[in-house]
Length: 139
Length: 139
Image 1 (cartoon, rainbow over the protein chains, first blue to last red):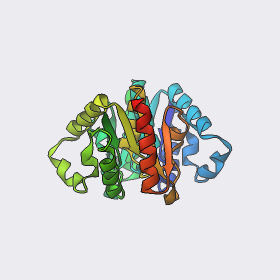
Image 2: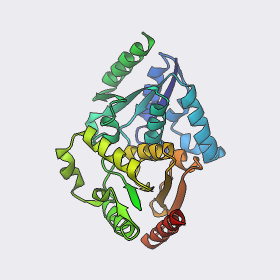
Image 3: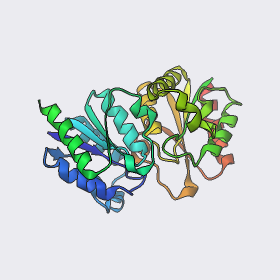
């Protein structure tokens, strides 16, 4: 299974360590096309690519993927954009949202029944939601 | 001209006063369908609507609009989602980004040539970019 993982990059890297943990978990279930999102030095590494190259690489990966997992706690324009593109492609999408941060998930996501949403309050419960979601895609 | 203005709501309301100023400027050029985005009490007012009602109202307004102006400085899932939907509809879009904040606009937006982007460092220069963009849509 090819998995597209989405998380905030320029929107804020507060959750980069969490992204790494999620990606490590996802790798037990399939190939993570966007493994670089968990790289804490990512913003420095990507300076060799133009923004157009980054956009086209990511959209090609999204096209190629079987499912999308989006960590949505840290607000991000890019993740919102990719969520809408994934919906156009009728791809199965799981949005993860951490309820411990005092934030509220966008009504554009919660109000769109296309998306599967998992609210979590621990890494363990996030992993459990991921496992349930990915197992359903296989069956 | 019907104008869809997009700005962060649940992603963070730091720029709500700026949104009000932009909306007041946009009203000189046409009808702003999303005038509520500049309302500083918005998060409280919207509790009477379900998230599905908010989503459907906003997407209906986006469908109905002639152009979209998106203030993109404050990262927001909802604005990213709406930008992708506007692109699907082949709507003319202007993204505004404040260069004084030490932030960087998402490569999903800067790397997608569909979007018009105006970088500004003062309200005056933002208004000038809006005027230039809207005048082009009329001609």
